[in-house]
Length: 516
Image (cartoon, rainbow, N blue to C red; front, side, top):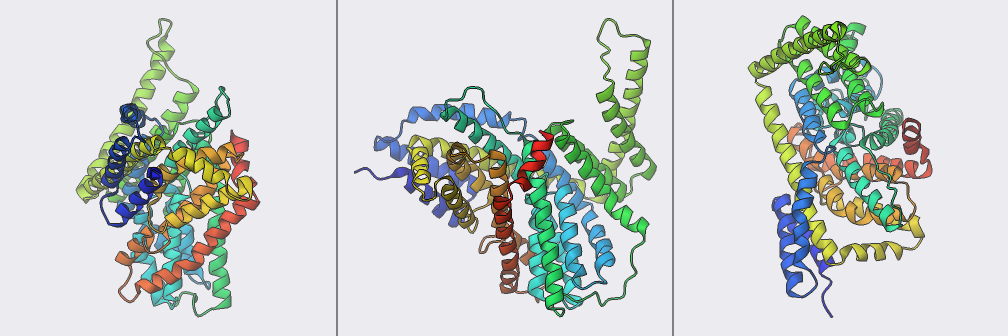
């Protein structure tokens, strides 16, 4: 009897990743090794590898995935511009006088940063260096403080826009199409990034509410664990609150509003976010305030006006009014370009531009290398019969479609202890999602459930990335054991959020149904 190479391949991948080798090279290496082994044993046709070039080309030209570098740039620029510090300081002064108020401010700032940056590491490190020492000085329990910082930092994975939701939407869209082909449908429906963003917004805000309620309940039950702020501080004025909150909120509205409203594609909205983040960072780094504000207003006016009254000067019937309108659009574009140039110059002089670009290239390369090599892995796995085996396993689960989904969510949760969300999304989900959708699960609702479970991979020891980020940024008196103990209640809250979405599917499906 021939060995089950598909199962051995999956086990070998997890084992090789746990050994600490670079993930992208590990995925490609394991796939290549088992392709040769399968060919030698007569279980794999090497001619299938001819489809690899087409897969790589399709990924590199995918319009959805091209939004990832721009969203990453937006988040990194905002993180380097110290906007998070200003938000934390202002919100801490606003809520610190109430019991549990510092914890509530951390959750709210985490939600704002999630919707404007989406970079988990940057958010956790910023709050670990600024908010956690303040909480400890004011008598907070170290475990509670560490837990709320870690959990709030991970909100960037479920609150759009986030790289997780972009990758997940692409994977689920492909799975949705495969499921329809398998059912004999040839009029194929697709899944858009906007639908996944809209579906994740309600559960993301529900998770924020759960965190806030937990902080308030903990402060009420054990006041010594989350006391009111002891340090003397003046409450911020309305102008200070507006100055700290309005810029990121306006950026969130511009980016999410464009995608959810159908005005802009994901990569167009990401470009708007990247330009807005550079303008905000430039203003903070010393660029002329009036020029930056005028440039931002000009670009906003240009986007609205060009959409309402587009000009096509190449047409033979273009008149003087068209040329005048075109000239005014050119003037607005030049004003916006001048503000952008001034912002880039200011951030370069402040020393934040080069690190932002380097971090963007590093993160983007890591994500795309993982996606590309996962395509090699899935091609070999399918060629070894792994797809059919996965479908058989899910069909054999007790409880039918619900049992198969519960098993899949439990598997994703367990894999989150050892693997990164990108690896789970691009390796496991293409194998299980088509079968789950074919069983009757709504793909948008399913994507939201999976996104919340994937978010917990940042919190689950021993390899939760948020735990590592906070360990590097936390004061030395906070032990690793206290960080692990602190995140446990928040992992339970995320499991509760999954149950809430399961029992009340309208939480995820209502907004996409209204908008799409």
